[in-house]
Image (cartoon, rainbow, N blue to C red):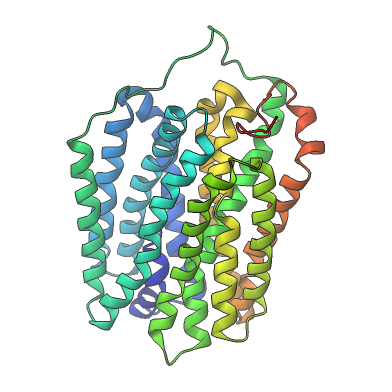
Length: 377
């Protein structure tokens, strides 16, 4: 969900919003997508992956196209429609990818998320073009058209098989005590990751716009540094995963993200904002696909059962943490202070991966793949 970040300054100007109100747009996007994620698992079980993805891809262009019209409250409703559609497609697409690539799920998820990153990186430039032409509606209509083309492709495609593969013996999906104990921790991990990514990706345009108020284009384009770095990191991750364990890559990435967040908080120039955006994007690039791939190690076959809670927790983070950024900015009068929120999220995620051996392993001794499916002998 990257169309909102580059357009956030324009929408805030269009509706005369302060930062707290602007944050409510991001909240609406991710809160609604959480509802979609809760529906996604049920839809996949009853309809299969293809129809589930088509439902989501029907809602998304409707929401984006209607966002070109109406007042602030109407915009929140339209963003909600888009969010539900996105929420339906995200777990279905990720779990489908992981299931058809069981041996190298982390690499496969990195590749598919890298493809997603191409759109995320190009979005700020397309938004800037529309704004330069003084036609912001072109951006919304163009995004809706692209989503419509993707829907058409799914309508003409076939998925074989199109449902969850059934493996194991009857009763093998029973949730164990350690899985019950670790579930809240994994939910917090996804909460912090999605929240941090959303904060960086959606607020950096506004931050850059205020750093250089005379150059609106640089602010609109600034998210491209973050999403471009995220794309580059996810493109490189499959190669790195051939030689290094997932948890090691995640820890190193979070160190980079910590440096990037620190650069943003201390930024005094556009160069610092660009550098911080790149480091944050590179650092966060592998965290989501690695964490998704490790679900099967943490929860075994019950990963499908808990996926709604895990992905939903991520979207709660995506809704609340950017809202906190806007609230802190409005209270303190400094968006710089708001970036402390995702920075603290990165700190806690880094602590999780660094302490995983002592904190998580005793709870999950029955999960041999806890440290990843590509462990080295």
